[in-house]
Length: 157
Image 1 (cartoon, rainbow, N blue to C red):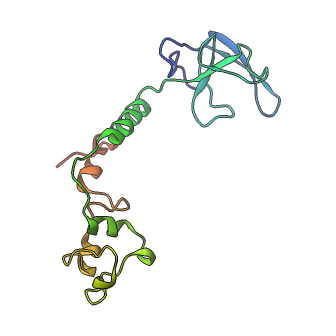
Image 2 (image 1 turned 135 degrees about the vertical axis):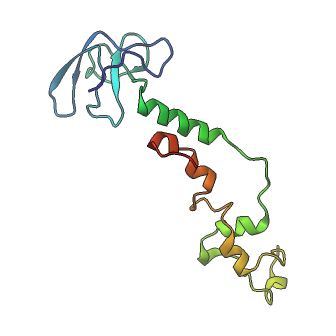
Image 3 (image 1 turned 90 degrees about the horizontal axis):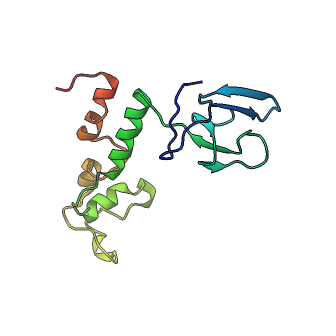
């Protein structure tokens, strides 16, 4: 359990006292705290706010995810911000090709490029595809690695 009175719903706080009947039928009692009982994230019962509970397992009839604090809050904020960072750079045809699994890539062989409906540019050779890392989501760029260094306590160079 963790102590946190704030929830992810603005203005909605954890109930001071509540009971929860878990999936095993055991009634648990809480006093102004969060729990992870039957849920992968910390949550608590709320009063007339949050999400309406189905059935009567929560004594107040409502619940909400607890607002994270400390390291978890910093990590969640960093992850949300990373999803908002978009580039205006257009992905070229070779970078798109580099994203395809090998079995589904268009032929990078210059001898057969002319037969393709939308041929790749001449600069998109098999070697160029192997070297494309900017658009390859499976590989971590240097800037992506650095964005979490301060959370891991690693000094940036």
